Length: 115
Length: 112
Image (cartoon, rainbow over all chains, first blue to last red; front, side, top):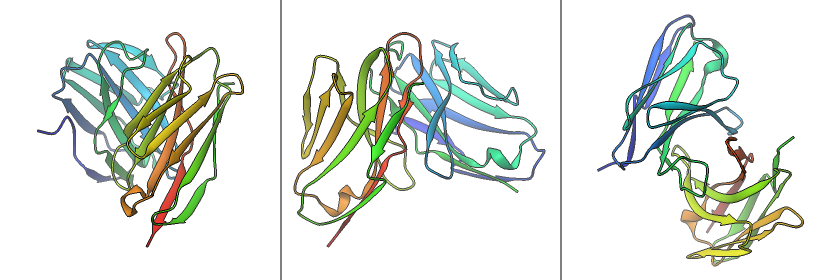
């Protein structure tokens, strides 16, 4: 009964490929997020969706495209992968709009390695 | 520019000892401050969330303080356990539709 789940846990791929990471939450939350954590462990928000609508898009290259088929899912598709995309990607969710004191619940992360 | 600075970068303490982690921020206008614990290989887990009017909040052996005037927060861990070994991340939110600002974290190692 995992709250926020991501697949795959590990992803190793070649430069130039296109890949997707899936995220699902079973908490009934309205808002979902994608974060990137680089090699220095610095977490940065990439996107946030509220009820399937994009709220935040933080200067992320347009090679990254989030897709939210429904409130419980927020997938991340990455085109033309580059070496600098190597990182751990975390999905998270929260109740409400995500602007107040809502607790964010994080998934286990997907470690992406681009060779 | 909205920033969150944490100190120390890393800390090693003996099991059973107390420790305090610091967080200074320049985020404005302030909405709330959160402390997260991130175990190696896992996603962050929320410990506390404090708004402007709160200056202390506890979660078991974790106690967070907030001084909104000096824009400082601390996380105090009492009677540390080996399982407290993790990164502790301070996160500050501004009012309005702006993203959370994350600190780089303090890496705590508790040794026997």
